[in-house]
Length: 287
Ligand code: G1P
Image 1 (tube, rainbow, N blue to C red):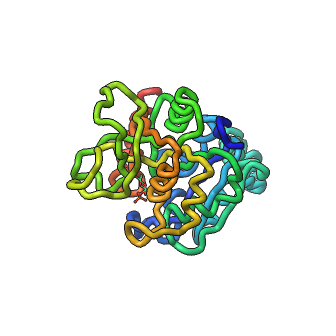
Image 2: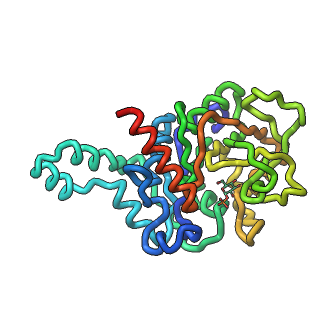
Image 3: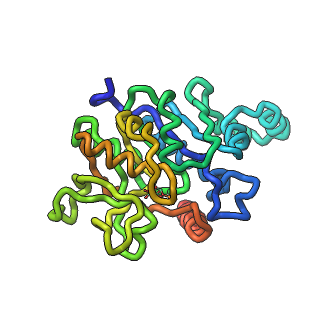
């Protein structure tokens, strides 16, 4: 049963074309672009592992082979580095490799959307509550963003859906999934918001709130039932947000979590550059 179990499984939908970053992403998955000293994707893999995740499911597309290579052992490279006396680097390269029995690779060969990608992971996820991380949302935080969601879930109890949210000006809400709050009277310092539903990319005029979903989710496997229906939403794609709304209508509780930390949209050039700068500043202040 999934009720009350720990969150040990994470899904990384990394099959996207990276259109907003073209031409940089013509031959390279956007998740492999460097963020400070390692690929973007490695940051969210490390976030998941630091939050207690033990199984990682990657939904890959046509640029997926380089992603697999990054997370596999490269004995020749390790040996070459060792022979050159670069032991620290050899160790860092070895540390990128994930144990094969902890990883599953699922191929998304048609670009039918984020919800479709998550749905393809159903078999690998099984009957477990699971996390979804969108690696182009990078979160700089003292406590990993996913760990904050897991803590909120532990505090609330049960087997609901937990979404990391941050407030954006009304003019920006149409880039996000947005919470429909249960009550208007959520206190300022209340980090966990009870929600009635979610809406994908509303217009500023129809936005139910300014609590925008960022790419960190804890979901119940019941979401797969809604995803199987394959309903098309915004942009003609199968949207995860729509499947969440259906799942909530069937009685699953939904919460937004206002996490502590700063999120950067690394799926576009300015956000990616700002995140690089923030990490460079954080490192130089530690030196
Ligand atoms: C996706 C989701 C959206 C969410 C966003 C966070 O949108 O569909 O609900 O708010 O990620 O980054 P996308 O950025 O793929 O358009």
